[in-house]
Length: 312
Image (cartoon, rainbow, N blue to C red; front, side, top):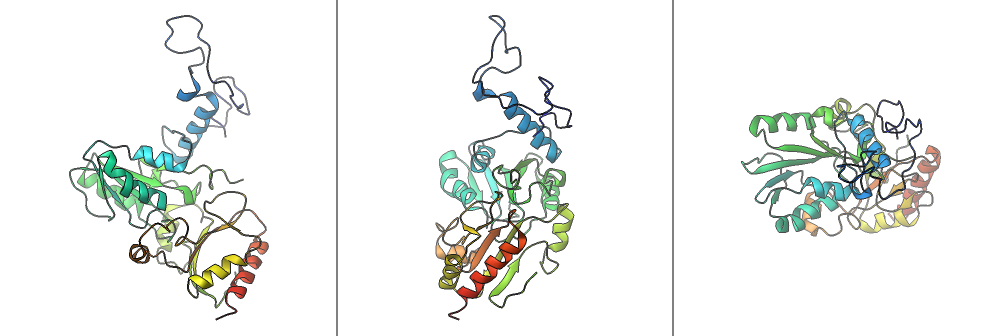
């Protein structure tokens, strides 16, 4: 990543390929200096490599500042460090980790959360979005939400978890003031029909109800696909048991394609009735497609579907 954001090299040393900075502390020329010679003091506060990464990601979004954290969930938690008595509005079928932050941690932090999209109050400080939503792949019109937020309350922040669409969508240009990318996902990630699939959920398909909105919000379609296998939890379990190329694991954006059953994995802690209401059914499967040969992935999914459907 080029910390100069314009591709002209690292700004402190002029290195064309910015070096990894291993130092934990930086030299002062004399007592009384406010900053060390380089502008850095201690690793905890910043270093050239991290600052370069932060400025580059900010530039990709068209923003002015970026801050890197050890995990995407840590970044989201920091965004939600709000004044006591604040109110947060969030989409209901949000990522499981974010849901836990808003339901289990928020009371201890002194703020409340409402999982609907049109209930702003004078105390609302943050509207938190995902588009597409993890894992149901429903879209949110970010520009429309941002415009409405400004009309109702100038002090409210609109934040978006953009991890599913790095770097094909700039949520910042659509009106989101805070954009989170999980850097271990697509940001850093170096045609058949089956009767065993009940529904394919992918905004890049013309059949998706929000396809036109998806085209407006990004320059290319992402690699995240969800589908409902025809059957129940037993059928879905059989599908996973027969995968060979695709790995059963949470996360996304690495160099391997993964498969996940949200009902028992990322959202397994939700009460059954709430989970079904939000669309996290026992047959909903999420597949973040990666860099393997496309035919290998297709054949693996097809053979696993066939094996899972043998008992039907």
